[in-house]
Length: 313
Image: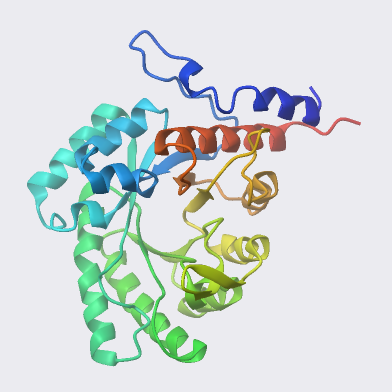
């Protein structure tokens, strides 16, 4: 089948959420991955349902398993007071095991800026993150995702981030946990800036989580007025990647993401020799959260299949 015929066929199914193949228990059946890369689900994809109370944190793994995902990526916001509650963490593990999904990482927010130029505040932020390292280890995750945020010049924030990551990675190493940084706005959305910090930290358990969509360097209100080249940025961050976030917003008639060239982006990930999970993170509003998640997963699977097909002569 040629590339273009395959894409046309794919477009006929991308939004057929109600017609997804199901097993005897009426649960959607996952399309078999053709790559060594597996697909996970980032909890932020269901942040509206979680914030509204329509979904509970303990229900997330079950939802991910029902939709055919192999792993889950938590956000600390949704169990922010449970980092040291082993009884609750045991419940999370039990739910994940029952759903047949791996607990991969915890995304950490609102625990202080690791790039704070105030030394006391920076050290406090590092200490605040340590309980999440412990929680990740208890759950059997491989990483915590942190942010490289701070106020000051690019050089000042980079130096503070370097100190924080070095200290936090040393602590995490004793727990067999990675500390990974996402391009998440501000200086961190500059691929070279973040890659340079990774090279300077130079620790085997400190890496990146390249996100396909977070490359806005400067905003005015809610409008992005300066954006880094997303394909260049992902290419710069992939040598240090220990996880990948497939951000999506909306889809056109052919099933492609309307703002990101997914075939190009997945190609960059694949060419980097990456063998881990690709995490679906849907942030759109036109489709429901579940429809957007399914559409993103189908698009990733199509791209993986297309990239592994031998070129027709």
